[in-house]
Figure 1 (tube, rainbow, N blue to C red):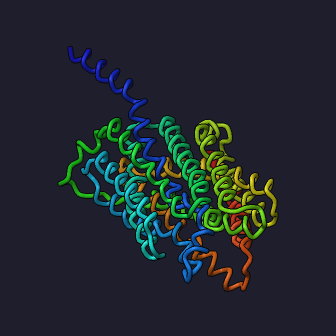
Figure 2: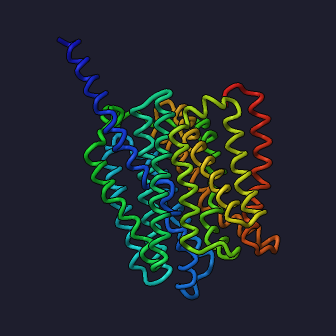
Figure 3: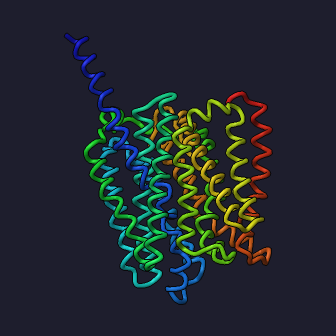
Length: 396
């Protein structure tokens, strides 16, 4: 009798896994590209809001990271025993309202306030979505699901950047309506996500274990990837306009091309990692190098398209790998591990324009492509290190 019940339970879990996966992955539609979704509208916003400093305009994309950082930290530290499903639903609701709120902004500060609240939402959604994957999937399936997670995130990026580019060509305010995507995601998550056993069995009286230092070390590359990557969404519209290659719509196409590549490649992460073996990590650094070399030293539509393909490879292969390595080192504390990676990613995102603008001012260089050249130089150095390390260790 007990044996029959166990078999029935396992069969039900197996049958529900596709719907559970869909529910979890739907959250990812709203995550990584949340800040960059309206990047095609950036140039028009700068022209429309008189007196706003260029750095404040760029913060429309990067300010969410300021609030993602403390929110993600709090989720990782204090969410033990709290329903992950309810956290996810709360995050999606806040995301939808705050994202669309920017449509009604009357000045740069009201606009930035809405972006701050959006950051709180993403700070909830992103670590919870990744933690749910780590809770329900293990081994090769976890790597595959993290790849799918990246694919869905980039599919959301395609919808958001492509749609916002078209909407921004009418009026920049309409670009912010892309955040209404949160409405169907809320419904899907409510129907299909279930609570993991780790949450149900959480002992609130047990002493909290410190996250191993190795988790933070594994999360650090997320900072470096996004420090470099965010030079693209914060500069692509201005770069294309200054090079005579297009306006907001073309910037939307470029970002959608990048995220489209990342979406397709995200479906193959587990296979690519297995195929490349020890050169998997160097391949990520190499693709990032190629991307920024093309943007930094050429100015043609073909070069931009090739750069976006390389950028898509970087994003699709790096984030799942970092997430898996961090959760493997976390000894079961998956929310804290994914929160650490989220912190790393968005600290890099926030500091990207600050670091790049500071260096550009110190060097007295005012070319838009200088940011890309700077990242290319740094990435070349990192690429050499990853190649050296790959031949010292059999596992990437």
